[in-house]
Image 1 (cartoon, rainbow, N blue to C red):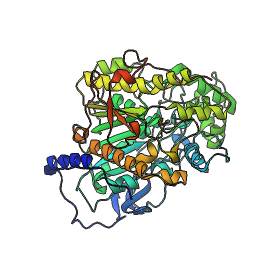
Image 2 (cartoon, rainbow, N blue to C red):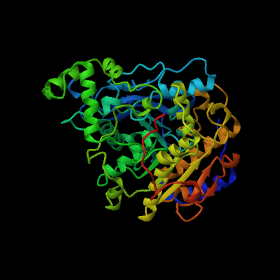
Image 3 (spheres, rainbow, N blue to C red):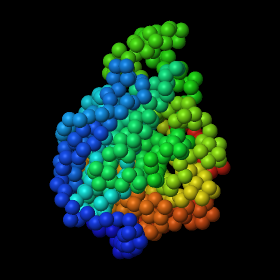
Image 4 (spheres, rainbow, N blue to C red):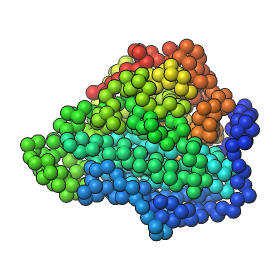
Length: 525
């Protein structure tokens, strides 16, 4: 069991709870059964007790979209509507993606981490657009804040059928409903084909959020307090969503972890089309002079496995983002986020944004596996250009337009999640996720320390405080709002203080940042 949050944090949370008591209704006397059937637009879903948090109701693999197969491959998702009973007892398939093999000779904890990222043993399928829900409706508020997770993977891989992302511990510790969902990645989510709707993987995300909006109240969630949070490509997705849906946001707040709309180089229509035609020729479906209808029919009739194999982008750093990803269409992905922000065309809701202090640690390991090396100066520039400076830009822009924003910088690291490329004062890309979800022991098959469990509990408390009241929840938690001229960057895990944070001036973190951020692609070794 996770340890309790220390006294200062408890006091802050008590103050927050009392302040907001009038908007919450106790549900401790409600007659709920763990895993009770819930009526949804997908049918009557029947859950079960979560395996390691038996007071949490777990609902897995609920379809939110029609299977994107046949004529729906490469097409925008269509909502699923069901009337039958659905036994939500197992995760749905992850969507087809590109992954790399993981050597067995690695230490057990490192193998567990990398195997999860590489989806070792996964059995993907195109019928993959499903959502998962964790809740404790029998306790706490009658209308709980909702946290919706969007996974990363460079828009090239990833899925919710991953032990690392189980929401059971989050929903057990905090008075929240935790949701995650699958979206299409790689060429299936971002085919780049001229004449087709672009970025259907991002449209999957939107449809999943519409499902949450329409159904989450039945799981004990508050439709007016939905927060989306994501890491890496998931963080970029969260930021992109903010710019795509200013007039119909659904959400009340956003959390960006190591990824923004400016972090990764979005593809021009020309570059996306080039990748599409290269794959078309490789598969044998024609050329860029072939009738587009004939090409599309051929590509839709080719097996998903053959398409995935043909779309592989090599090894090392080139494999991280692949050849297919978000494409500028000025509908879901924009050519100039700075101008769109200055024009006020974004969701003006509170934001928490941040990154880790040594994101490069993970990428160094990936590069080393392919015999690629970079200098430490190059890796520092990589960290700044892709993660730190874009986080500074997000925070600075929101602050300038009086949108509540908080910013963190994380260095929390523990023995069982340490990679060979980092030390115990440097957090690699994604290192915060295992403590945040409480999944370190299951993923690494090694014990977590008391301090790590305490740290994870503190993070969950912060994320839940934000979701409960995006405008002031983190202030009640003791975190200062971001101000580029003040010590307001929250240093998580600094100096081995895994619970009570320190604070830094942005200029001491944002070394080399120009105008708030730099935009760069992954380095080439």
